[in-house]
Structures are given as C-alpha cells and as structure tokens.
Length: 113
Image 1: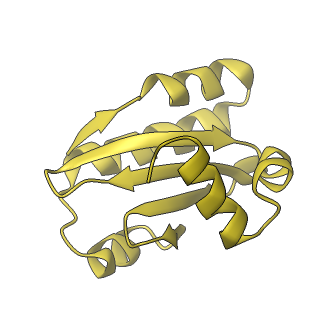
Image 2 (image 1 turned 90 degrees about the horizontal axis):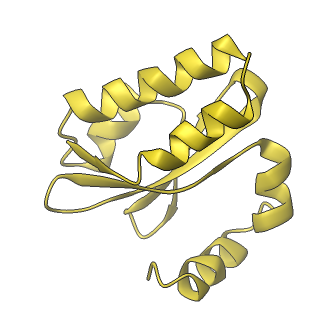
Image 3 (image 1 turned 90 degrees about the vertical axis):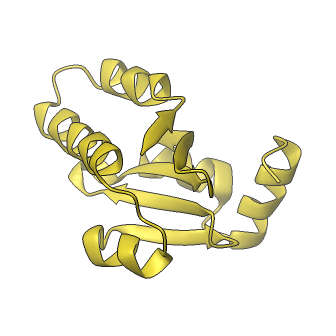
C-alpha cells in the first residue's frame, strides 16, 4: 500500500523526540500499512485491532497506545492510504471533542469529504 502524507508522521515523531516507544509504534504502523493491502475493513480490524472507523468505512483512527497518540487515515480504493491527522489524545479531544459529528464536520471543513 502506498502512503500519502507520511511527513505528518515524521512531524509527530520529531515533536516527541526522545519517545522511542512511540517512534517504534509509529514505524510499525507505517510498516503494516506498506506491507498490507487491506481490501475490506474486517481485514484491517483483524490485523490492527487499534483501528477505529470514524467515517464512511474510509477514515480510521489508529490508537497508538504509547501516550494515546491517534492517527487518522483515509483508505482509497486504489490501494493508497492518506495520513489525514496525527496528534496526542489531548489534541484529539481538543480538535474532535470525542464526537463523530465533529469529526465529520472537520472532514468537510478540510475538504476531505
């Protein structure tokens, strides 16, 4: 699978310099994405139980357990995964208020849907 906007994850790692556990977890997610071609949501969930669909079967948050880092990814039918957003759990709550309607509005406002 091809990953678009991988630089967002690099920025997250640089922001948390010194957090080797988070860096390793993010690198594992990148590896999982690059090595797999998940065609169905069930395939994704079976391989990454930390994935949570937040909109339309296309947008998922991955809960990187170290420091509750969340990464939102859009999966395209053409085999691409686009990194949409990454941040800490506090950033997530500030931005999305733990609410799917707020997530949908954010996606619309940022021209993702």
